[in-house]
Length: 317
Image 1 (cartoon, rainbow, N blue to C red):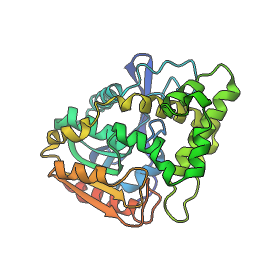
Image 2 (image 1 turned 90 degrees about the horizontal axis):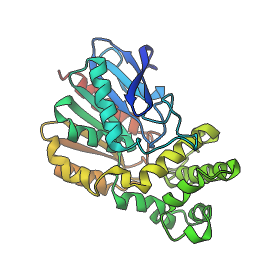
Image 3 (image 1 turned 120 degrees about the horizontal axis):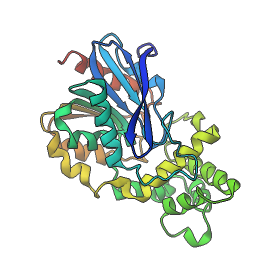
Image 4 (image 1 turned 60 degrees about the vertical axis):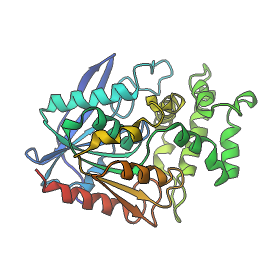
């Protein structure tokens, strides 16, 4: 991996609806443009992500999606209205940032939820995407959400029972994202905090399928927990603001855009059949399967595979 990126420009972009999106640019100002779409929704962009890019060859753009990271307003505030925080709004924000920075086309890197957002952006603005590099690929389907909310309980039954029991008994057989979303805006701060802790505890468990997995340190931060839990429950309870199966059906719109999909076989919470189906429907994509990796970039080979794909595309004008 490359050295940590040194930013040479940053700002707050007014994207409307009372939202201001934080952005940052590093690497070579004259290099190949690339934008990074983080996961969650709600995790914010971490500087370490830039280490998969060669800073001598890429102009690297980060943004914190609406409501999280350094963007405002902060979704952790229970009074903040999330009605203007949808996939369509995020896609428009990415396009507005591209125009603001004077970029004609750029490579799009996305991970987890960020891979879904990257696909939605590329399918709506294919002429603005030079390549796609996606890892821990998710498609935002109803089945994907239900798999995490309930089916992963077959892998971690005791932990899932604690997650389910974090909501009132009357809500336990319904949509758990709905139930947690209600708790996260409860008038009692203690109720909100417990809901955020319970939600993030499950988030940290259902990806823990790799030997030696260590808990995500970000969940120790109360502010991060609240922002993350509010935004994930908001998106999941609304089917990620996508028509069910939309990203797979729309794969034909990616024709002519080269792509690399990197996925771990041990990513049980986001099974490999999703990226495999996407690769079948998108002839310009190459699927790279890593036998020892799970979800995210913590496995032994994930960062290397992503870096290799970016190094490959760096030479393409």
